[in-house]
Image 1 (cartoon, one colour):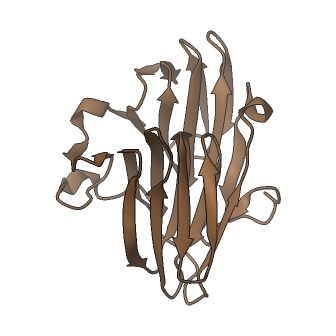
Image 2 (image 1 turned 45 degrees about the vertical axis):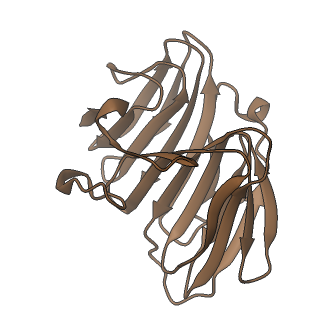
Length: 232
């Protein structure tokens, strides 16, 4: 099963400094049919103005992954962690028993990012934060695991849920297969470029909800950067 969710049909709110689109119900956007997809709860497509950002606010019991598409985001939290994550790189915050954090675009340019929340399958643990560089050249023509709750994905940032975040760049006319598994769910978004997934055409920033498929084949109709959550 593949369900295309065109970008123009997802939730949207423009707060001036923040122009946010919501693939799932979030804040003032409520759509009962789009509350979650498996353990995936939030996929926000955010555009953050220069010299602005999210002031300190609390979280708990959520795995929060930030995939920076352009610009950079600077993180600060109540544990004393601080870091700047640039385009193509990833940060992960495991909110655990509770953490307060802020995220600012301290750059002179607009920052765009995907913020992805996945419900944890392990709870009651202390909060943590981490970031890692993932050069786009290292994932050209393939999908690379960037964050994972599985020990065998040793190079990925750890998350406390039975899920993976994978990403890659695909040249125009080329295809990449991904072994999802018919007992799992996938949610795929092309950050850039036009793609086809098992025959279903999608444009940049469209959502593609996937279930009951062992394998998906992603073909780039033009050079594309794709991001996928693979979850229960």
